Image (tube, rainbow, N blue to C red; front, side, top):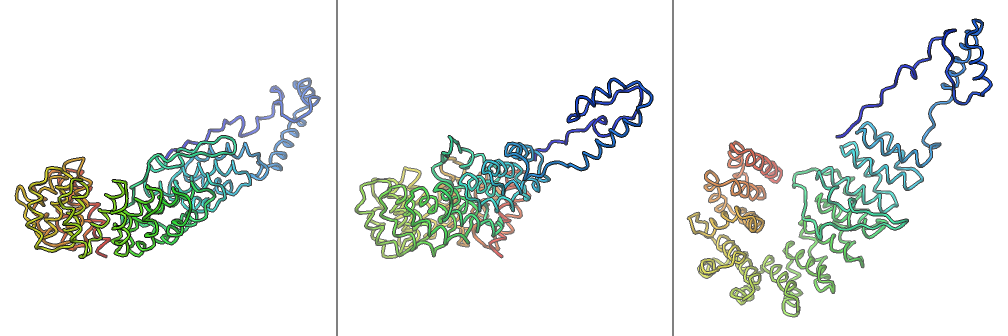
Amino acid sequence: MRSTAPTSISRRTSSAPPVSVRSPAPRIPGWSSSASNFSSRHARQPSLPTIRGMKWTLVLALVLAFPALPQEEMSSRDKIRQARDSGKRGPEAIPQLEPLLRDADVEVRREAVRAVVAIGTQHSLDPLVAACGDNDSEIQIFATDGLVNFYLPGYVETGLSGTIRRAGDMITARWRSDESREVVDPDVPVRPEIITALGRITTGGSSMASRANAARAVGILRGNAALPDLLEALRSKDDRLIFESLIAIQKLRDPAAGPRVTFLLRDLEEKVQRAAIETVGLMRTPEAVPDLELVLGDTRSKNVRREAMFALGRIATPDLRELFLRYLNDRDNDLRAAAAEGLGRIGQTGDLPMVRRSFEEERRNGPRLAFAFASVALGDTAMTEFAPLRYLVNSLTQRAWRDVAIPYLSELSVKQPVRAALYTALPAGTRDEKTGIAYALSATAAPDAVEPLEALMRDPDPVIGTEAVRALRILRSRIR
């Protein structure tokens, strides 16, 4: 938190000089020139001390009678300068900034919200929630990013507010990332009034940019209370708002939202269509299966076809088994991987020999990880050197595949035999393996995972210990 000490005041300005016949009276702005000339002409006359004393008494009376101008009488330029200075002083400046957030001049309000965001402590939350109700799009964007930044430090550096540019009355902003996969930990408590304020902007913001930015914020903060607002935003005609709302819905992981998304599965905008397909897959929405099968067979886009197959592989209803068997040897790597995932989730143990053989024969890392996942899901929990589960754990050390292996292990760790096998891998694991397993265990809500994570907290590697503490915190929040 940056702060600057108040400027010191010299004694000359803080108290009146002693009255002396040998020292001339200072020149006082606002006095007539004749009065000044009178003082200088008669400075050495001994009969004037009483007159000088009267002058200083009058000055003091004037100062007391006319205090500093209230904010209502300050110019907009002075208020903007005050807001900028207040932003450098820290939380104690919040009371001075709050009236500026309600100023009639929008430029003053914009500078004030920037200052509140810069202060960035818990004392900023109430003013930022209030600023979300402003009718200016730029203020809504800054307030939104400032609220997220409190829970996700550094967000304002990469958020939409950091790209705002003004040209007269026109405001432009550039999305630095096509989509945001950032999300706070599940155990982070977010104040409900913040989610309410962000939900209102999502559906009633002053611009489509501020609405889409608020939808992104709802997802990052896991704001389940704003799910109705996200679903309403899906009916918008703005592609960016629809897309951000879909990604936010994915982060909320509420299965009830799945059926409300199916109308977008055949959207003409491919980016929106793919996000909708991914959403119903993550929500495991069986109502979407007929539409997904149509998309799989009709689309000309390879990316859409792959997304549809992965969605079907996540939903994995038993009647899809024949479809997965048909794609198990497809030339497309992603289609093979999705088919393998589907067979693993359907869970017919009779498919294990076929899936295990495909795992051993596969040469591409992506499909091989999927075959490893399916093998473990079908019951192969061995931790020998070349076993599928060992392959998944080893992949945690590869930067390119770590983010694929962790979700697989998180899903598999729900099963107790898989957890028991992973516990045996912890003592001799590498840093990446231990932290990856810890993350996977945190999603299980399994009480038997507490003791292994507590042991991992005592690891001599501080990185491992820190991740174990985080995983244990999340796990305990899920157990409760």
